[in-house]
Amino acid sequence: MITNLRVSYLLMGILAALARVGAAQSAESTSAILRTYIQEGLQSNLALKQESLEINRVTESLTQAKALFYPRLTFNPTYSLAAGGRRLQFPVGDMINPIYATLNQLAGSDRFPTNIPNVNELLAPNNFHDTKVSVQYAVFNTDLQYNYLIQKDLLSAQEARKRVVENELRYNIATAYYQYLQTLDALRIYDNNRQVLNELARLNEKLVKNNVATKDVVTSTRYEISKLDQQLAQADKNRQTAKAYFNFLLNRDLTADILVDSLLTRTLPAAPASLAELQQSALQSRQELKQLGGSLRASQNAVKLNEATIRLPNVYVGGNAGFQGFGYTFNNQAYVVGQVGLSWDLFKGYEKRSKVQQAKIQTELVQTKLTEVEKQVQLQVLQAYYELDAANESLAASQTGLINAEQTFRLIDSKYRNGQALLVEYLRFQNDQQTAQIQQVLTRYDLLIKRAALDRVTALP
Image (tube, rainbow, N blue to C red; front, side, top):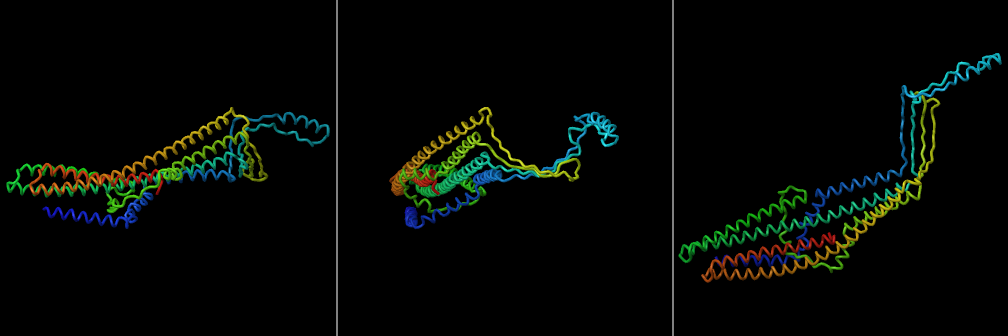
């Protein structure tokens, strides 16, 4: 049994050495699986699809704003039927007919008509149509100009918003992948230690059988195995949960298999640039700042829009061409009307001044938010930088601790088999070794997660 343990330690050492040798040569290939998953997530993630749809919506708003610059052509026929209502009554016949009759007597002829009827017409036209084509064109309209610019700025902000979600998604996928691999390593450690305890149980059974030890060494070992089984069950639950969350981010079946990059943790991330360089890079690359920049430009154009409506009028041209009259005869009913118009609100109860002030306040609000976010970005980079530095130190400490714990356990294992150590000492140092192994796995993946966090706050791909 001692020989089997030594062979196991030797094999583990050889595999670790081979992994370290191949790590440098496969630095790019080891992350290829993760990069593939990130690209898959960027194409299929539901939250990102919602952002794409939102961009499409804002794009259509921009198209609508641009359409207002073109002439508007409208076909607008109307036909009216009326009955009752107010009438226009004027006694033309009663006034004119007697005069014409007198003139005919004086002239001795029937030259002047004497049967002119009185006017008695409905004010609402009956059997009347107006069939026309209307054209309108804004020659000069500041509302249209600045509205178009505002929509462009909002589209730019929305596109930046999508890139913010993409950056966050990259980080979430990488973190979820690391956490899944972490659960696999934890299961491997617990399973290896269970094998060690099973071997110890067999050894203790032989010692009891040979009257070298009492039965309590067997029951104590079995109790330790049962505790380890509980840890294995918990670790397997964590594995299933981590797998489901990772597949959720990629919009896949929650139970889909995940390819494992076994050499990923063997390749530690390269040292980052200086803190000042990272902060400067973040200020140039963070899409949150570009999103606020688009909102700021939109607010500035809103100020210009409201100021322009005070200083400048709107000028337009238009016209109508068609047919108008009683009955759809189209005979002698054609008409053409041309128009040139100007609209200028000279006074509106100081409403426009208030809108200008409101737009300026909104601009100042966005500018203040932009300044705040810049400070937050610098703070985030600083925190992520020092957290990564601390993770590096923790990893070095955990590796040293693991080496010491393994060496100590090997000594205790040898002593116990030679009857020079107690079971309680064996179990204690076996547990110390397991704890050191788990801690070393946690610190390795924590280092990768901290590097992913630094890449996120600096907006590095």
